[in-house]
Length: 494
Image 1 (cartoon, one colour):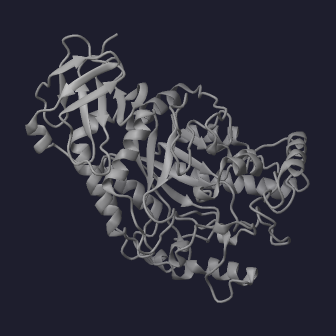
Image 2 (image 1 turned 120 degrees about the horizontal axis):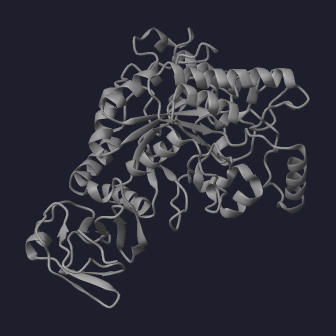
Image 3 (image 1 turned 90 degrees about the vertical axis):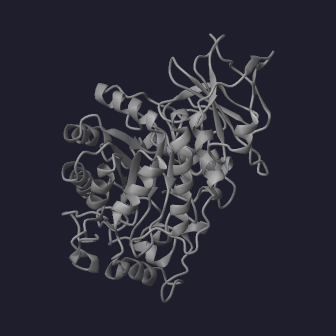
């Protein structure tokens, strides 16, 4: 993930760079035209709930993934570990040496996959490589990987971690997605060792050094095609590092000059550099290997961003294109000792809010250095599992039902079919009230209204603004689930 979202406000979004546009809800969206990918995106929108995992050698230091080796002055880049964190060169050397102690012998992805499937998750996105360049897969293009000779886990029969994860999750019926960082701060073709790194960008001018940049393009394309050719069926290519993108000299000069003139002192932290890695060409190759592949070139408006990814936040209203909120479940994106996870009620209400607005939830869980999950993650997924066993039909394959939310009622519907009205109790509520009044669409005349998990018809009547439903004592005293309850109208009024 690019950065902890709490450091960002709308002002920073505007001032820092156009590549931070995932924080804007009016970002340009270009619909996909490849028929197989269009159908795949439609199917993905019905999945609603996925798992994201940030994991790498950095987990041993319990720090924000990658960013501390980037010479930028943000809070998440602060260097606090190692023998001499004040010495940048020493810090980077010791950071990269973490590969020599990364040995997650507790790694059992089948346990994760089973918990995710039971929770109702339908796809997984795994960090095959973050910005630091350390590969969690068996890349033949670098030894800086979990299978490289310097990593003790390389001798483990399950050392190709990405492959093991993808196979375990597919076995549980989940789609698979490969998170891949376009910038690579370990690669000599991105951060040329002849020059010091200046910021998150390539540390030389690609236009002035085309041969070196071509080597980086070949390296990047090669690694992506490794993942798409030797790791089984892949559904999503989830690309991070939106500053690696094609920019014209004119647009860079115009934009950068404007920001220098308008930005408050200290706000503008990095340059905009033309970093064309020929995405159209890469996507064409990728889809030859994986027909229908969904491509998410995050924060780069254009044809290769098949859906948008608001980071650690939920849009205020439905968005007119496919989207997915990627949200931290506890701690940070990467492993945090003693992480406090969101409660079951918080997690379930989050999922309902996102789905009612037409999006998907990609919930991040960070494995430990030993290759396990914290108990809090299992506890949270257990809460999802219990709730989804009762209410999943109000979640999967649904679309927005205008106005999507009314007070504490969230709404979804099946295309051309039933409508669902999800009651979100307040913090101190543990049961449904005697009467639920809903402002919004109403059931069709004669339609049956039921509570999911029960199925017996409930008395309802139209009101001026919508309809109301009587909840009998047996359901108030013995509800079928906790945290939220879904009323189903078999048919909606026209």
